[in-house]
Length: 262
Ligand SMILES: [Zn+2]
Image (cartoon, rainbow, N blue to C red; front, side):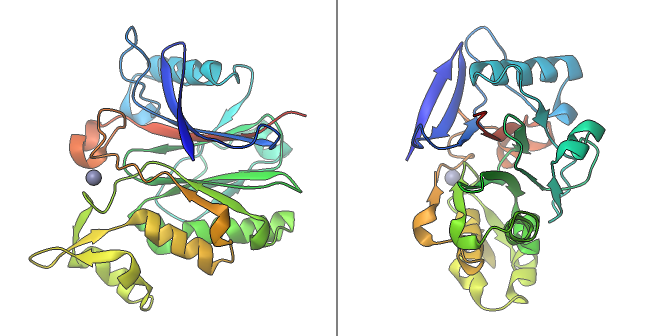
């Protein structure tokens, strides 16, 4: 279950997790309220001062005004950036990666999205949180599996301890691709049939949520630990930025996740 939340004119979606859980997570919308313009959070898509002000506005709305927000240089790959004390000091904004993981409470992790699927992973004991940027390319490379592997290797987490939240993304209703996009998935085995659906004239509809849910299940995450929002960013352009619908100039929303300070 996910709920809409609004504070000071900033609108976002949040999974309805038990208040006692050590993790907090939010998926931003394009709405910053009547007074503000669109809530673009991507530095490459707007004026730096405006984007930084927008990011600060979101953190304030979430009650995280003092918390550091950590992002990476997203490259549609499968590399995972572990945010420990050293990485936090050094800064990782220029690090090419598509997933961030931390066990540090109070450090907000963010990935930017406009149609791509944001996935938040977390565990309770030990408390660890991750955010993953999974578009078609990242899904092809198995970025979610790569994040699970890091959770296991660096934090000793068994996949059965991991919970997953899948945010807004372009849905199979709107994500129509040609054969070239399907081919790399075909080469990986038969699984592609579970998330590609033939539409017309050699075109295929891709279901990013289904593809990543399958990877999570294959990676050992229990079905009951996986929650998907299933809101299409193209059908719901009123709320979300969409690269497909708006082109290169589309702003970016963000999936944010943080471990609560004790
Ligand atoms: Zn749609």
